[in-house]
Image (cartoon, rainbow, N blue to C red; front, top):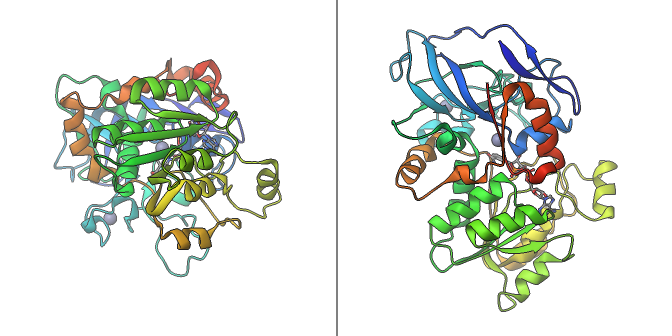
Length: 387
Ligand SMILES: NC(=O)c1ccc[n+]([C@@H]2O[C@H](COP(=O)([O-])OP(=O)(O)OC[C@H]3O[C@@H](n4cnc5c(N)ncnc54)[C@H](O)[C@@H]3O)[C@@H](O)[C@H]2O)c1
Ligand SMILES: [Zn+2]
Ligand SMILES: [Zn+2]
């Protein structure tokens, strides 16, 4: 089959690889009908995450048709159309029983990314996301093996297109969980840092839940313009405003917003000094977006972080967070928990996640898709690939 494989920094290729096979009895084999490139894939593409091997298949946002199912699969059968969560979860461990699916302690034989690990087990395995997360082959491919098929894949009703439901696999629940974690609702004010796909999904979900005022910070004017037109955000362009937190505080009676969603992650672009700190490894992650989040949030507010982090940050203003009495919520998304309710919102026409798609390409052109999405060329917001 054809699949998108990793060969080093900025080097991904569509190649012929062996077809996947059923391994465990509760596996399915999926024929992929649509898959997307995620901002998290860009961290891999830029060579920022260790644990990838030459030829590893990437991709964790995908959906398709069940081609074959193991004997232990009771919930699905050949021919079913499903969307698959990026987290692989067993459904009955300590964490899965608390619906904390991304913390599943049985599916990741890899090390995970915790530095001070002690004997803590790794969180859930993930598709196409390095051997730190279990080394599972990803879904930017014609076929993919899906383990734990009684727990993850969500069977889809008739009448919805692939594009309407594809983002249930990752960015839609991620934006939704970020908004739930932010504890905002009717009458609230919210700042969203990052106008990428996750920031956009957070804006859509914040609107759904009645948030009154949304600021969005990014450095790409075209993404901000789209979010302003589609979700009514108040755009703040980092290229024009060098202290967005000060702007947000000034626009909210010198208090700050009720909550901030940090949808940028550890590669946040900051000042020259901040870039130097990360280059010299004095900071493991860029702290610039987190510092902005602390600065923009009112006393007693929440900083909700879907953006991915790894390792340490020195310039973390913990004292400011303490003085303001902030709460922090973060982590990988518990996708399985949020998918059913979000599917209902899509069916009711209350959510249209596919509105953000800017590029529809063939899987064969996936390498070009990565380049365009990474370099923010052609006003790229989101790339969907079809095998
Ligand atoms: N928690 C989860 O389960 C989960 C799931 C999906 C994605 N993610 C993470 O969410 C983050 C965003 O993903 P995406 O798909 O939207 O990616 P993306 O790279 O397309 O979007 C990031 C956006 O942030 C902007 N940006 C860069 N520096 C900034 C700064 N200092 N302040 C404000 N904006 C800045 C960029 O211009 C870009 O538009 C990534 O870190 C990704 O790994 C996490
Ligand atoms: Zn992702
Ligand atoms: Zn589990």
